[in-house]
Length: 128
Image (tube, rainbow, N blue to C red):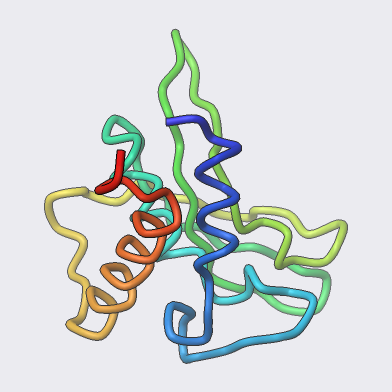
């Protein structure tokens, strides 16, 4: 999967229905989209791992999720929602989640499924 195309599909598919707590802010569509976005990225890049971290925004600490992909001897962060944070924000803690025991609530599963469905529709995967 081309990451630029995947990012475009994700951004076109984000909504209050896919965000954490239904948050939506004009000019900041990535807000609240990090976890379902990381699940969709992992769907298209199954060797990627989901990472849960803490981000210091300069005002407060916030929980954040992104993916990492092993490349050679290192890892590459695939964070398609980082733009929700103000400039100067930094990751202060991180842990790789167990893909076999994510513990998602039914509401979280529904948000992730909705985003995946909308991304697939945007990409028109059934029509290809």
